[in-house]
Image (cartoon, rainbow, N blue to C red; front, side, top):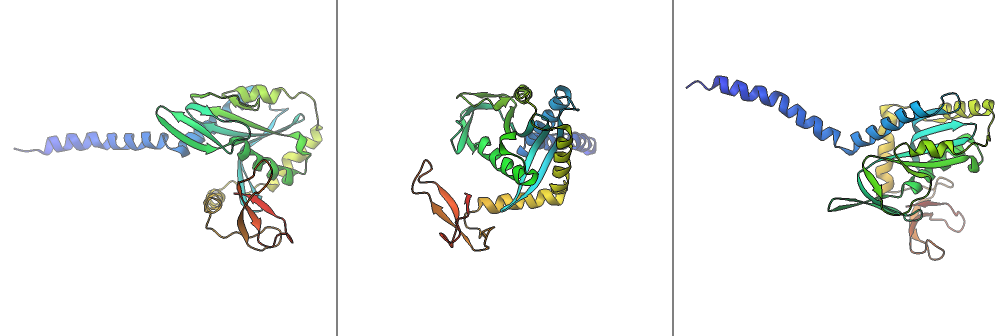
Length: 256
């Protein structure tokens, strides 16, 4: 019996089935979900924010003392600079402003992730250094895109869907002139790292290095080694941090 027609039919079916499965897997990956969320934010901002009043940059990578930091979205306006972090997540979200980690509960599974407010704080400090603006005019905004539901009370600047639009528009008191906004835009465009694949790869390597507790680190101030220490007093007592090995001569610290 000639099985050639059957084999050809099966092979033809696999020819589209396998790529389809690979595509579905890719769309469910964290990388794809992250980019989808950022794309939706861009579309919402394009439709809802006046382009004359709100200048915008996306995927901004800035140099920091310990490597780089990558900001999803920056909106510059007469009413301040808004730094937006996007989270594309489903399920229930538990967290408070001061918790180091928040919790995502999806069906029977529980996942921990970094408090996005803390994550965005580093973005704010990098922008403050790059732009030289008063930190009072820098505003942190978090938006959750997807089917997530907050199960604990969150601050006003933690939003869902297009809620970040309402939060940004709630600032109506001008703090910058149009000329100053143009100057800030120019400073950020020239101060950011080139938005290339090489920059992204370097940033990923920096993230891996910072998350590795055994990796060697140098003090950005004096060049000595950084070591892991434990806070003994204050509200954060018991938490670990990076401190300069020459302390108290050099008092540089970094979060772990």
